[in-house]
Image (tube, rainbow, N blue to C red; front, side):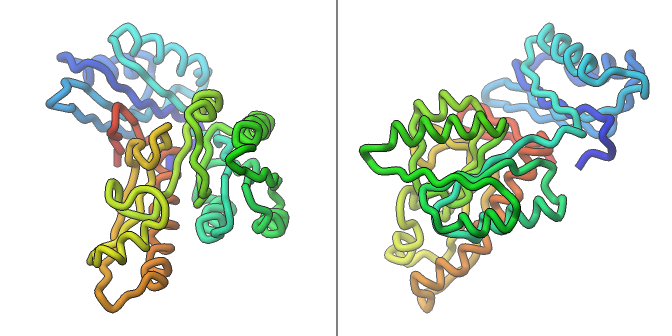
Length: 286
């Protein structure tokens, strides 16, 4: 996490050109800023430059104004920028179904202040986790979803998420497909955890698919959600070894640990403004 609340964190990308690192550093220096961390990457095939830079401004500087000025400066270089104030704690909503391991893990990490955010509410297509959410002191809304009711259900979900001011939605084992119109209307990033090492075993029952194929590794994948099922830019993945002695229930049990850790890491990186998605890929800065 950032060292203090008076820093700015910027993610930049755009066509590569000579001197970009010097120009961004020079702009910060000329305004009395102090760079705390900087990293960059160049996509050699596409000629795209990426940078993450964090800096502290002079104590009397107005940070929102500094943020806007830096955005205008980077735009003049042909770059797109996403700039966060390190003291900002984004409002995060969780969407869940019946599985509770990722739900509990994220909330407990948040309560331990491992995640720099505010969890603002829980949406579910089942009532099962309502009492647990209430125990955590979090709003819980049960919105059943059926094939016939899906458009109306998604409209109600959008209404609740906007009511809560959600800036990020995390699917903590939410077992429904979000439609293209939902994602477009929402206008906020959505992170999903899929219980396989994508692109292998996309869709339903991946542990069963993996067992049927006799794989020796199972995995979990956290990715941004797009209108195409389990096809969004990948943020984080991990694997664990299994053998012919493990049944489906063993794979599910082993996989739950991966799902929790992979999802939490992906959410944390997003909150720290370390993930830059472009096309079907991401750049994740250390």
